[in-house]
Image (cartoon, rainbow, N blue to C red; front, top):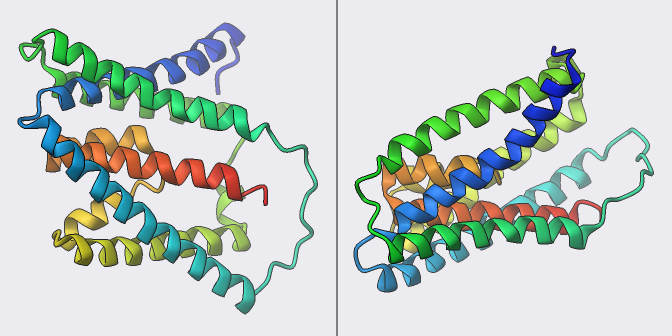
Length: 224
């Protein structure tokens, strides 16, 4: 763990900037998709069906888990963060992507190695997250020895995959593509780049919108 407070602050500040950089690069790549106007309809259709199907399966299976084996611990009553502020922070990420698209439409920057820059930025982001987790005092043992938390996590994982298989069937998409789009579990800065790299910027953008939507839904319903 880091002991230098200046370094810790630098890591924390750099994390937020890396997320913005990754999403900006994703928007830049999206600007150079052929037939962008017609592809936007595809992006939103895929994202909406994927988000609706996954969320429905998540909530249904979590309700089943709660009925089958309710938690034995007492809920902690802590002060909830301002949901509107958190929603606004999440929506700002959409504006960063749009700014990347806008710049890409105004200037031809295809000579830049956008995919390579995105990959490097993602690797650096993951490194910074690892450093931050180590300095937060969180130990892997604490996570793994929390049976109720592990049940919830396993339920969300499996139900997300089930929802993506259903969405893939509705969209006529290969099951492997649907599973890839559902397996970042709301981590939009990861899914946008990885899916775009392997499956193209159209599905990468749909994965970003899907995961951002999952985060917004979580912000709204977890306190409830």
